[in-house]
Every structure is written in structure tokens, then in C-alpha cells.
Image (cartoon, rainbow over all chains, first blue to last red; front, side):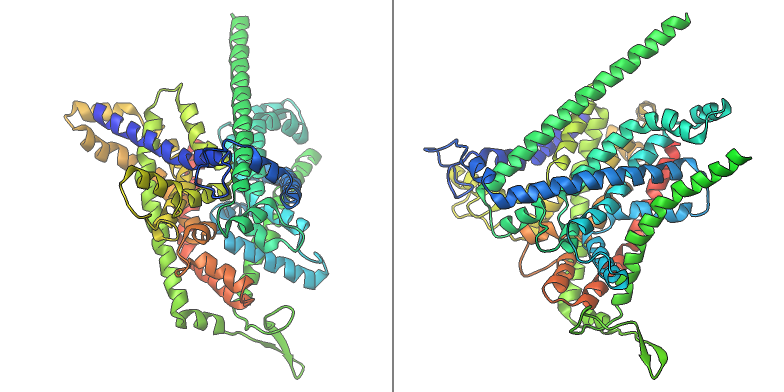
Amino acid sequence: MKPRGLLSRIALALGLVFLYVPIISMIVFSFNNSRLVTVWDAAHSPTLKWYGVLLHNEQILTAAWLSIRIALTAASAAVVLGTLAGVALARFGAYRGRMLLAGMVTAPIVMPEVITGLSLLLLFVALGQLIGWPKGVGAVTIALAHITFCMAYVTVVVQSRLAGFDESLEEAAMDLGARPLKVFFRITLPLILPAIASGWLLAFTLSWDDLVITQFVAGPGSSTLPMVVFSKVRFGVTPDVNALATILVLLVATGIAISSLWMRYQQRRRERDLQLAAAANL
Amino acid sequence: MAVRLSQAMGRRLIAAVPTLWLLVLFLIPFLIVFRISFSEVRLAIPPYTPLLSWHHGAPHIEVHWSAYSFLFTDPMYVSSYLYSLKVAAVSTLCCLLIGYPMAYAIARASTATRPLLLMLIVLPFWTSFLLRVYAWIGLLNNNGVINNVLLSLGVIHHPLALLQTDFAVYIGIVYSYLPFMILPLYANLEKHDPALLEAAADLGARPWRAFLAVTLPQSLPGIAAGSLLVFIPAVGEYVIPTLLGRPDQLMIGRVLSDEFFENRDWPVASAVAILILLLLIVPIMLFQRVERRQLEAAQ
């Protein structure tokens, strides 16, 4: 029993090293003075030079702002559509059309991005010819594409959260005379709120990070941050991208730390409420 | 009665909105790709021949096989198709061999440390995929970190050519997709009943034998889900081979993108997409079955 536990623990430790060495090396070299990214210039480092270069790069700032706006739009719309789909799949039984929705909703998760991107662009071109809208590709078509692949993830998260609860609470509220809409907002929505929150964060991250699908449905003048970064790094390493990566890693780590602390606080509060309820019953 | 009726209407509306969205933005686009793959390229807007044309007042359906026959006669396309399969298969196997023991160790860790370990696995996934692939350029370069370390240790005397190799592509894919392997495996392994292993030990089974006879067969759904989550997107991978891979051997996703953007040949790009889909349709349906089973088990 023991030695196998030890082996898998060593594998875990090595695996975590593998996952973090590239990220740590980017952070370290973002403070390097040398233009040769991977040669440490000990005489003049550490330096914040590349952060300054980054923050004065008009192209990167414009692209980042566009990416943020698209990600906010896509995540919010995807949460609405994904919640509707998740509720339909988990709560409506075997209605007509369920197979169609179930089949379409998980496919975008595994579909190779080049195929999704190509097919969406061809759709926009065909629509443009047929009904005259959209007039060209740009921020709007990027957002439409992002909503589509993000809603798949939200659906899965919401559906599996709903699968974890049985319908007795909702049925009890119905028996007490509550209207379906009221049941949804008073019972179902609070239950799946954590799933909706994590679905929104997941959708925001996926939209913010997407390159391949975006490249297909973007037009001139609508370059998102990943597109700008990709065109920079395609021809070799550039030190200001290291600075960008460091800022992103710090933001994500802070966000995850805050959300896990909040979740722990919620958990404690729930446990305390349960204990109080149990005590009141005695 | 009125309440009943409006409830049915409401339900239909709730289900209809996402279904319609996906019909228009997911299913119909595939039909368009399918249709354009049977056209010929031409210098016009749009740059392909129409499916339906009028000859002397009668409709005439034009189906061209030229895009497909072109793909099968040019050895470049066949070889990049097979190469993509090989890369995806090898990377999936490596992910499984690295990910399984990691998932196993997390599932066996104390309940207090498990959330922390899972967070460490997921955290890189939340940071940019593109930047994490880019980080490997800095590590694998001729004057990169790995070569510098090995040179200064005296292990090697000339820098190793690591970048723009198959090895770099494997590293990039395994690195990027490892969390997708570990999470379904962990979700499966965590549910195993330790009493079964104890029973096997009581009956005199060695730990390895107990693992092979009890744990491994039980974890097959997790292995299937994780492997499909890695294999399917890896076949069409574009960013990793473009940044880290060989310039002389393209993967099929890059071929599709180049046909579309560089050669402006929409029919051939569409035919490539259809051929990738044909290859992936069985794995995608398998994945949906595994997912459905897991959701039903949760219910």
C-alpha cells in the first residue's frame, strides 16, 4: 500500500513543477533588462522597464479594452442562454427536441476551434448576402461567436449543479401555490447561483483568451488582445509579453484566492445556519 | 387549467431560445461548410460556385468533387492528416501516463489538502493559453532556459535543437491539456470505495495486482472522458504547432487555416473541415455518451 502512494505523490510533485516552471520563468524574465529574453542581464536587473514599455503600447491597450468589452458581453449573454439550456435539460424531462439541444450543446466544447471558426465566418458571410446583416465582420460577430461557444460551458456547469438537487423543493413550492416564475426566482435561481457565477467566470476567461475562432470572425480594426499577442510572438519572444503574462497571472491568482476565501466563508455560514436550525429544533 | 397551459408555454419558450440560438449559430454553419465543400473556387464574391444555377429557365444543381479529389491526390494533405492523428494520439497517451498518477495522488490526499491541490491544477488553465504556450518558446529556444542550464552544467557542449520539433509540439499539447485529463480522472477516482481495495488486500492481493484488478477497471469512464477531452481538440490544434512545431510538417488545423487565409480557397478549406469532422464524429459521440452517463449517475 505505502510505496504506491509514495510513487503517485512523487508524480504529483513533478507534475506540478512541470505546470509551474514555464509560468515562473515568464515572471522572472519579465524583470530582465536584456532584450535577449532568456539571457539574464545581472548588472541591470531586476527592472520594471518592460512594464513601462507595455503600458505605453497603444496597440496592446486598445486590444485589451476591446477584449474586455467582448468578454463582458459574451459572458453575460452566455450565462442567460446557458442557464435556460441547463434548466431545460435538467428539469423538463424527455420533451420533444431535448436530444437536439443536448447534442448541440456539448459539441462546441470539444469541436476543434478551426472548424467552429470557419463555419461561423461562412455563416456570417452567407447571412450578409441573404439579409444584408451583418455588414462585415468585427466586434459584433466576435461577440456572437464567443456567446455560442461560451454558452456550452455554462450549460454543462448549470446542468450538473441542477442534477445534484432533486426537484422536491421546487415541487413543494408549486404545491403551496407558487407560480412557476416565482418558483424559479425564489428557489431554483438561488440554488444554482454558485454555478451561474462560476459559469460566468469561465465564460469570461474563455472569451478573453480565445484566439483561433476570433481570428476567423474578426475584421480589420477589431484585433483582440490574443490576436495582437499572437502576431507579436509568432516571430520570436518579446520581453514586454512576459510583463503582460505576469500581470495576468497576478490578477488571476488574486481572483481565485478571493473567490475561494468567499466560498469558504459561505460554506461556514451555511454550516452555522444548519447547526442553529438543528439547535432550534431541540 | 390556465396556469397549466401557460406553464407549458413558458417551458417551450425557455427550451426554444437556446435551441434556436444553437441551430442558427452552430448547426446551420456546418451545413454551409458542407455545401461549400462541394463547390469550385472562382474569382468572385463569394469566391465559390453556387449550388443552384439556372440553365434555360430550369434549376440546375452543381456538385463538384474537385476540392476532395484535390485533397486526396496531393500527398501534403494526406501526410498532415496522418501526422495530426499521430500527434494527437501520442499526446493523449502522454497526458494519461502523467495525469493518472497525479489524479490518483490528489484523490488519496487528505480532505483538507485536496481543494488546494485541485486549485493548483486548475490555476494555469485560468491564465492565458496563448501565453503559456509562448512560455515554452523561451524555455526551448537555442539560447533558451533549458539549453542555458544544460550548457552551464556541462551536460552538453552545443545547444540542443528543441524548438520546432515534434518533441516541442508534444510538450506544448501535454502541458496545455493536462488539466483536462486530470479533472475527469480525479472526479472518478475520488468516488472509489476504499473498502474494495481493503477486501482485495485481505484476500492476499499485492497492491499492484489490486490496482490492476480493482481501481483501473473502475476508472475506465474517467480515462475515456479525459482522453477524449484531450484527443479531439488536439487533432485540430492550431496555436501549439504554429508556435512550437516544425515548419516542414503542418498539422491539419494549420492546413485548414492556411487554405482559407493564404490561398483564399474556401471549398478546399471546407473540405478539410469536413474530413476532420468525419474523423472526429465517432470520438465526439463517444464523449457525449460518457458525459450523459455521468450526469445521469449524478441524478
